[in-house]
Amino acid sequence: MNGDIHQIYAVRPCFSHDIQKVMEINEATLPENYPLFFYEQILERYPDSFLLAYSREKPQMILGYIMWRIERGSSSFGLDYVKKAHLVSLAVLPKFRRMGIASSLLQNSMKVVQKYKISEYVLEVRVSNTGAIRLYEDVHGFEKIRIISRYYRDGEDAFYMSYKYDPTSQYTHKSMGMSDEEIFRHYLRINQPHLCFRCPNCHHVLIKGLNYSYSGSIHPNDPSTLTCAYCNSEILKFSISQGKYDIKL
Ligand SMILES: CC(C)(COP(=O)(O)OP(=O)(O)OC[C@H]1O[C@@H](n2cnc3c(N)ncnc32)[C@H](O)[C@@H]1OP(=O)(O)O)[C@@H](O)C(=O)NCCC(=O)NCCS
Image (cartoon, rainbow, N blue to C red; front, side, top):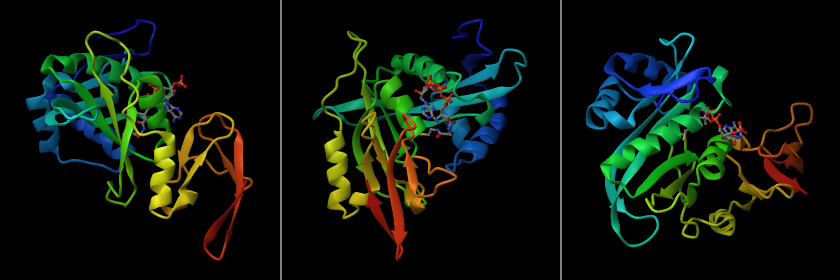
């Protein structure tokens, strides 16, 4: 579990004396926070699913964490009632991002929770959290299964994403997930077609989050430009008239 010795971090299980630091990272990085007993309960019930990344140079320094719970429910990939690993929380301190820490936490923990004989991994992620979506989808093979409307307390939608564990194959079972077209149709159906765009350059789907904070970043010097969060190309211009967005492609 310790990983490549050239990396500045390594991964290890969480112990009860680490929870305070985990809570600090959670509170600094995510709006979804939990009381102490919640972490203690996860650690007590699923000790192997709760992992930390720490600094090799200063081993007492925790850089990120991941925790899962195990549950039963309907499969995302068929009609079966299955055992799933449900991602409870994953976060990395801002200074240590884009070094592969989350990826390593995911990879290690997904391997470890197989001991619970799960057949799927599932998670919810904010539709505007393009970085995390990219991590789950492009790097780890999760699929968008459905949109859960207003899943978060502030009203933002979540993607429910799944990965089917198949001990005989290292590849995901594509096809049962939500296609980009279905995502477009969902926003059309709820009468909000302006919330969803496809980047003409890299073809990723970009979905606007709550309060007009775009999933793509708005160029600081030109507020009428929307830049794709995946490939950084300028994908559209828009203007606000009478409180409404006029999309100008
Ligand atoms: C999402 C998060 C956990 C990613 O952690 P991380 O350690 O930076 O991720 P990794 O370095 O392992 O990223 C692996 C790959 O995922 C993708 N990725 C991760 N963050 C990304 C971002 N902000 N933008 C675009 N792609 C991103 C990239 O493909 C990246 O590979 P690359 O750096 O070679 O391009 C981190 O940004 C975070 O803690 N965010 C706040 C909490 C959060 O949103 N948690 C997820 C809740 S569901």
